Image 1 (cartoon, rainbow, N blue to C red):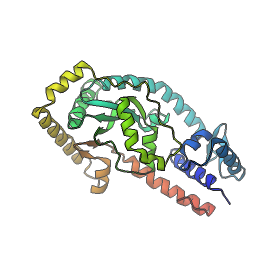
Image 2: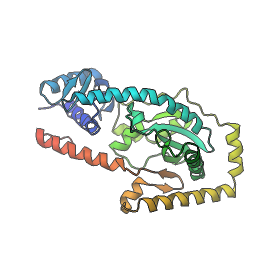
Image 3: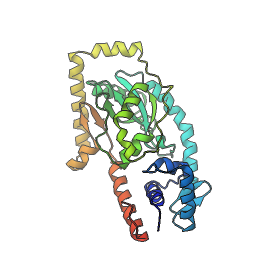
Image 4: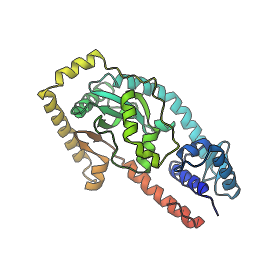
Length: 304
């Protein structure tokens, strides 16, 4: 008979098993969906799970499969991330100078401390209301003209304005993305974003809020001057036109998506722009549910 803590440890490891990503004991604690325990409690339960052969320990890492390749892969990915995150911070400083950018967060694999050779550097941008699509237009043009459309160092796939910070889809995938994102610009808006999405505590009550004390909030005079030029009817019209251009191009390019999936993977409203062509959220949630059911059947337990 497994304890509630052990069941939640297994559930946590199942989620990261999707990514072949082993966890340390403190990481399991931070990712646990309950908060009535300590790291020492987790370590004790992990010892019991390892003795039962339900969990494996390799060095300081715990995983559901006794595969040392997963540990080597993680260590290599952590080391590569340490190198690439420095350039991501430098790039963020550049992005922060663009008109209507109010906050920048690193998301995706880099925010989890892992990258491989194929990984993109993903960003979530918070913009001024009414100018989200103008902001996206400026950044997209810069990427295409000066960065040769490179996704490796400049993949901005999510924009929201600061009047609409609460994420609509509330599930383990979006909660994971929110608690792990790394704020790199816009202290005030990170605080606001965090408070608007406090629902993530239902999934990760132990995950600490990222340190944002040193974040910059300043908007340059150049930004202010450019924004002044577009804070009028011309700017309103340009935002509408940019939204229509992006939305039409996306719909045409991904016409094989059904309406439901398209509306979730490619949100296009005046206050939100999401561009997730791989629709990773759906794949992860389906895989998570399948793995949970498989483990439940094998151990004759309930993890749902």
